[in-house]
Image 1 (cartoon, rainbow, N blue to C red):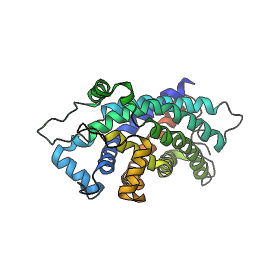
Image 2 (tube, one colour; image 1 turned 180 degrees about the vertical axis):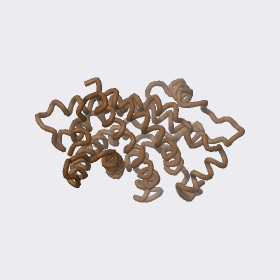
Image 3 (cartoon, helix red, strand yellow; image 1 turned 90 degrees about the vertical axis):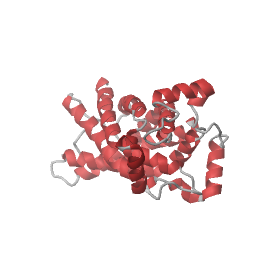
Image 4 (tube, rainbow, N blue to C red; image 1 turned 45 degrees about the vertical axis):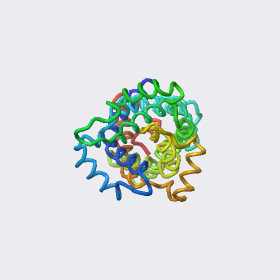
Length: 291
């Protein structure tokens, strides 16, 4: 239904505005050197970005996700909603399958979008000097000029490995949390706070399960700012990262991502669900605010 696409659009805008500063910090932590780390943690990273680049440094690269993620959420909620309705009943299985399909589709859009966003986020030259890129669109244009179409899809396999199961878990867990929260109320109405809680928890659950792929994807997409690439591909970045930094590398920046995941996905799901209700549609996720 068209309502799913509209709800996804509104949810996407809300999610980007809430979560982008957290994402900038996460990317800086994921890509910093383990030998001579620039930041001691998320808070230290945030403070240094503001001091060196002003508060707007936290919003670097937002143009790409604001356009891209809004479109992606439109696509994801539209695909997931319409595929899920093809099942005979609304089960956790149906939400996982429809979410996974939506995640696979979105990978082909989120890949280049995140590549451009990451390049801008790590392109730090302080307040006075200009960086290599003037924004996400400029970054993507220059990447295409230097590396062609293939270069714009650097890290695609890791993006698919993250988003396909990730979106399945995302929608399935939202259905589960909505149902469990609804059991706490006699009338089965979970209300705004219930929606916010279910949305936030579903985002955190999804990221905990797939975060390691995001670390490797980010590293593969972040390199080359100095004109040199040290990774040959997806397998190589996994092997070298674990060999050089140990298995703990798979959780690098996870704390920041979870802090971002709760408010971001609370905003996305709540805005999307309420939008469907305002348009007179029943959300396919726990029937809106019903248990």
